[in-house]
Image 1: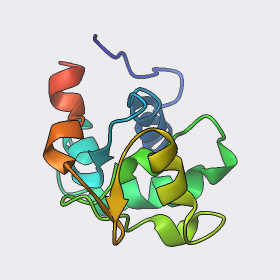
Image 2: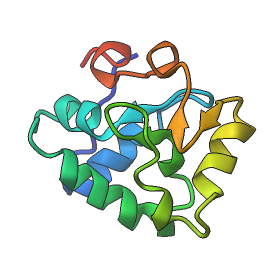
Image 3: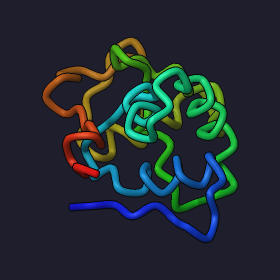
Length: 116
């Protein structure tokens, strides 16, 4: 699959949302992997800001974005402290102590999966 980023809207947050919408159910990615895919390797924190602002975009599965070792660092920005974990578990992802289990086997790397 090849993703063609919107030429209509070059806004960084919108580019992040376009990629996050492609993360399959039952898979997760990291802030850094998204930043790397968007060719801004040092922008993992900006991806985090985009995820924090994504909650008004109901079609952006922000719960599928975790930190580089699978921690649910964004969980405090959801409706409740457990919402992110509940959404991941509803997709079959096991979470213990706010950390995704079997992280490497369910990790979705857009640089590999989208081959842009």
